Length: 405
Ligand SMILES: [Zn+2]
Image 1 (tube, rainbow, N blue to C red):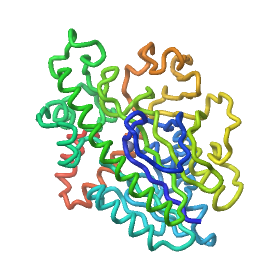
Image 2: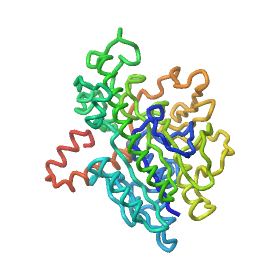
Image 3: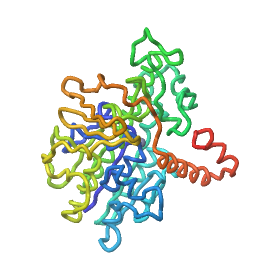
Image 4: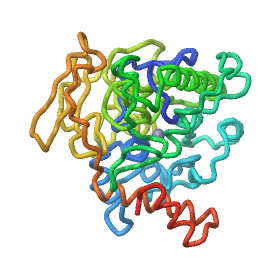
C-alpha cells in the first residue's frame, strides 16, 4: 500500500476548488485546532492536540505520543517520509526521511520533489507533503496575480500584520504573521473603519489570498493526478483555515468557521466518488491510514474515514480543539459547541440559522496561551534561528522581537 497525505497550510474550506476526479469529499471536515503545531500533532498521532501535548510532546524525556510512523516503520517495513513539517516535539523520530520546515524553499520545488518521490517509492510507503503557499504572507505566482487583477499594490495590511505592530499582550502567541488584529472594518462596516485598515485593503487581502488558493488548487490537482495514476491512496486536506477580516481577525487563532472548517478529500481503496455531509476531523486521518495498512487499530481517537457514515454522536471531549484553555469544542452538522472551562459554560451555535457563529458571544477576548505551548514554540524558533547561523545575540534579539522573551 502506498499512501500520500497532502496538506495545504492555511487553506480554508470555502476557498478550495481543486478538481480531484473520483475523490470522496467531506463537506463538514474540521481541524482539531486553528493553528499548525496543534493540527500537525493530531494529523500525526490521531489524538486531539490536548492529548498529544499532555503525552509529552514538549519534552523528549516524557512518554511520547505514537505517530503514524511509529506504527508503520520498523519491523512493519513501511518507508515513512515527510517534507516539510514543523520541528516541534519529536515527531520525526521514526520517519526515515523527515525534512523540517526550515529547509522549505517553495511549493513548486516541493511539488517536483513529491512527484519524483511518488514515481520512485517502494511498494509500502507513507509520505507527507506539506505545502505552504496559502500561508501568510500571501504570494501568488506573477501570472496568477495578473489573472486576479491584482495590479494595485496595497500592501499596507500585509505589512501591518507582518511587522507585528499589534496590540498583543506579552506572553501570548504573538506569531507575527498569524494574529488577531483589531480591524473593526470588516466586522462593523465602513462607517466604523479602523484608522489602520480600510475596507479596500481588506478586499485586496482577500483577493490575494484567493489567488494563492488558486495556485494551490493547481498544485493539489497535479499531485493528486500523479498519485492516483500511479496507484497511490491519497488524502488531501489543510491544517486549518484563515480569517480574512471576519469578526475583526486575521490569521488563524480561534474556533470560528473560517479557521477550522477545512477541505478534506481522498482517493482510497473502498471509497467511491461523492460528497459526504458527515462530520470528519483531523483525528480521523491517522486511524484511516492505519486501518488501510495494518487493519484494525485500537487506542486511537477518531473514526476511520472508510466507515461511512460515522456512528457519530456529540462527544464534547472530542473534535475541534484550540490552543487556549477555553477552546474546547465540537462541530456537528447542526450545531457547534464551544466549551469555556473557565466559565464552565458551553455555547451552542445553531449552524442552520447561524452557520458562521456570528451571534457568538465574545468568549475569545483574551489571548493568553498555555505557557508550555509558548515555550514549545519558542524552542522551535530558537532552533531554526541557530540553524540559520545567527549569533547568540541575534537569536535573542529575534526571539525578543517575536515576543517570546
Ligand atoms: Zn498552519
